[in-house]
Length: 109
Image 1 (cartoon, rainbow, N blue to C red):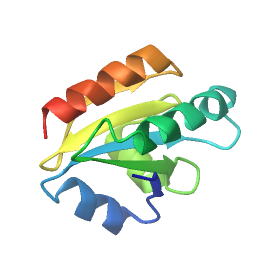
Image 2 (image 1 turned 135 degrees about the vertical axis):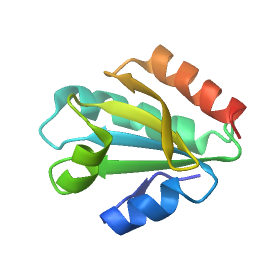
Image 3 (image 1 turned 60 degrees about the vertical axis):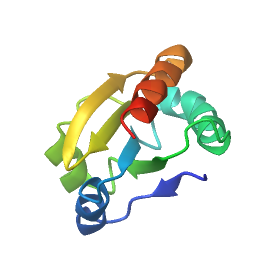
Image 4 (image 1 turned 180 degrees about the horizontal axis):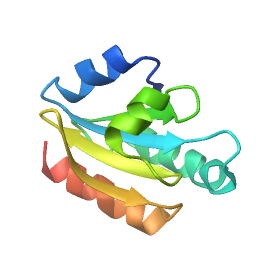
């Protein structure tokens, strides 16, 4: 499943309250580590290994209301949401940690 951009606070709220397991990559265009991990995140999303998990990304500079609501303080941050709540997150460009986070997200489906 391709990674989709979240483009509004309303869309963010609809998604996290949809009853589905949502993983969001909070990133910024100026963030070097974000550029390193982004292709890995995209590849994992497209792999088919995480059925039932939906993949999104949020540009923290263009969607400040979302980043503020979630309490993002570092980029990249990957956050897992279910039933309107953040259930887990991971800071930094760590491919092994990201794979573990996605495995835990899939276990919540």
